[in-house]
Length: 216
Image 1 (cartoon, helix red, strand yellow):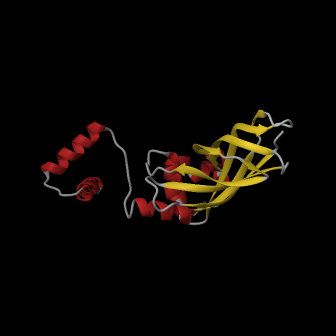
Image 2 (cartoon, rainbow, N blue to C red):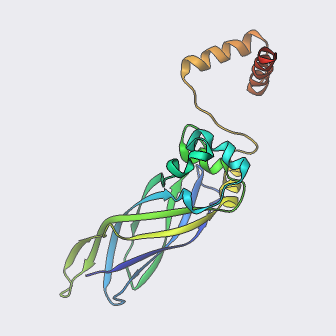
C-alpha cells in the first residue's frame, strides 16, 4: 500500500501562460521505492497561513477591509482559503516531481487578491492540503485503488516578489476591478457627458469633486 509524502520545493511564474499562473514544484515520494504508482488523481486545497508572518503599518492599513482594525487581529486573523487545484500525476516509482498549476486572479473583490496586493515584501506562508485517488500495482500486479489520506499536507513560503513580478507582467502598472453593470453604465454616461477620454481621467475627476465636497 502506498505511503506518500508531499513537499513543495519551488515555484515559478511561466512567461507565456494564457492567464496569470503560478507553477508550484510538487515533489511526491513513496516509502516503497519499488512499488509502481500508475497515476494519482490529486486534489489540493491551498490556504494562506496569515498568522505566520509580520505586517508593516502600511500593510495593516491596506488590510483593514480584510481583517478589520489591527487591535482586533487576535480574533480576526485566521487561515484564509486561497484556492483549489487539481493535477493528474503520471506513473512513477520512488519519487517524482510535477507542476501544480494555480491560476491567479487580480480581482479585488477576491480576498486573496486584496491580501497579496497589500504585502510589500517578505514571504506568503502557504499550506497545501492534499486528497485524491491513487492507482497502483498490487503484489500480484493487479490494479489497486487507495485514497490519499486527509492528513497529507505541505507548507511553502511564497516570495511576495514572485507574485508582484507575475502581476506586473500581465497587468503592467494597472489594477482591475469588477462592478455591477448599472454602476458601469452610470460611470460611462458621466465619462461621455464630460467628454473625458480615459477611465483614469473619469475617476480622477470624481475623486477631485468628492474631495472638494468634504472640505470644511
